[in-house]
Image (cartoon, rainbow, N blue to C red; front, side, top):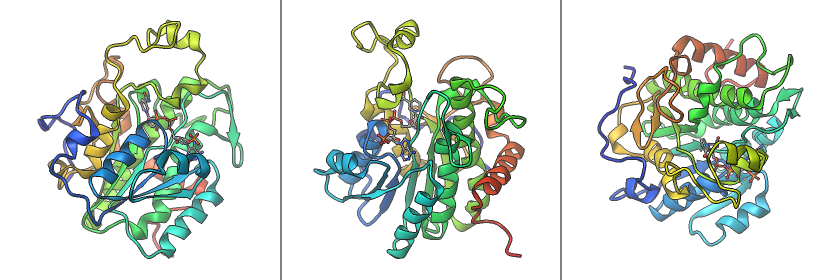
Length: 321
Ligand SMILES: NC(=O)c1ccc[n+]([C@@H]2O[C@H](COP(=O)([O-])OP(=O)(O)OC[C@H]3O[C@@H](n4cnc5c(N)ncnc54)[C@H](OP(=O)(O)O)[C@@H]3O)[C@@H](O)[C@H]2O)c1
């Protein structure tokens, strides 16, 4: 049964924090894997899950920096992972599988935004490769270890998905690069991935969700020139947040924590969330509100899965021949 892409009246909102949505939820004995769980929204997610009793594995491309960031938090362990390097993804997944543990929550949070044209692996565009293909390979490799009957996979997308659907005729931007189209495509891919994973995984009791966390000043904006952020009205010349709709990191982490843990979403999946709610479908250009129809289209989702499985060589659901 597919879940309608409509609000459910969660009672939470844009100002809810990760701790708010975890009120009364005991995560003792549960394990979460949070990619990028040592910076920005990921760090707040790690902190909140750990406070609620979960063990949190933080795979990091800079393990020393990660260790410094999460060092004081009980129940958190750091491992090594570079999502732009499929060998690194394989090694991390194999190390995790070898521990014999299972994960109730996998939060695909790590990401890069609007970087200058960068090529990784066999020449792949870096935002698509890091934000989507790396997570595709990671989740598929971790699939045997995702808790049956109670597992959730959450992909952190963005309202920026409105910039682009999947550019089927030029996925790798071989005919000219645009940093926002590339971010948009990668964030649409995060949503479509959750749609298809939910369809494939729900019989095993593993559900998938995607979300927009809100707009939050974090190191994610590292590739944006200050003038661009000033012109967009996000910050003033001194770097202070100007846009009153911006969230704190604690508020920004709330929707991913809610999607991963909330009993309000029991029996649901495949939907895109925002402000600790299921979002509505929209074609209006209202930044950060709603999800575009192309991003939740099941045919697009299946097509992207086939493409990603072909590119990465990883598909936990491939028929055995
Ligand atoms: N902040 C916002 O306003 C906003 C809005 C919409 C969506 N989002 C989404 O929210 C997520 C988290 O963003 P954030 O704002 O918390 O940004 P952030 O502070 O920059 O955190 C991103 C994390 O991803 C990690 N990462 C980047 N490339 C990686 C790679 N190749 N392999 C492994 N890890 C990698 C980074 O590691 P390093 O620190 O080592 O580089 C960092 O830990 C992203 O997916 C972003 O697209 C954020």
